[in-house]
Amino acid sequence: MKKIAVLLIALMMTLTAVALAEYEEPILFRGLEWGCSYADIGEETELKLRGLSDCESHSVAYTMSGGEDIPFNKGISCEAWAGSDALDEIRQVAGHPVVNINLTFAYTPGDDGVISKEAGHTALYSAYYVLKPDDKEAAVDDLTQKLASLYGNDWILTTNENGMVWKTWTGANGTMVALYDKGGSNNYLWIYYSFAGADDLLRNAQASNVGGL
Picture 1 (cartoon, helix red, strand yellow):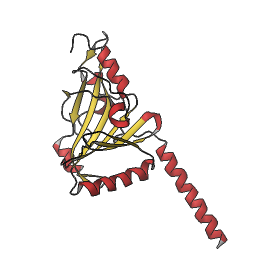
Picture 2 (cartoon, one colour):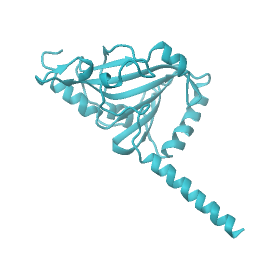
Picture 3 (cartoon, one colour):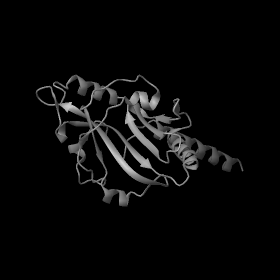
Picture 4 (cartoon, helix red, strand yellow):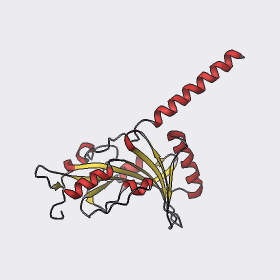
């Protein structure tokens, strides 16, 4: 019995060490490195991305961890969506139906120091799954448990007066993943990925946005 007890203790310590090691690693979106360009990812990957288009820019620190809300100009970031054939293959995430996948990039300066809108002058700073669960309340509980099992039981809880709720887990190198619920009658949930350097990418794009491109 003593030998069995020792083995069980050793196994528990090993599993704990593995869990802690996983939590301390960078949190990535489908293995993509933060800051990589749309051109690096390409349109032939499993996501079969649709073309880039300009989008609104929001402070990631503010939305995911209750940090400073930074005002950004339009025209400094862009987004791409997974193709319909990719969504046919990626039907579920964490056991729940996925209806859309989005990647967001900041524009980066060209040789002249002004932001360029070419695919090679973009830097990935956030990505998310859009989920449409059958039972949203049950899905929130389930996804919270699943994310906690991967990244730990300590998360940052951010809410606002409109009922929006963010539960954010952090990993190595300032990486983050969050479960986002808009609240109210909205039937969708988001699993949102980003990293601490996202706002710096947006600041650099804004500083290089000469002429309001």
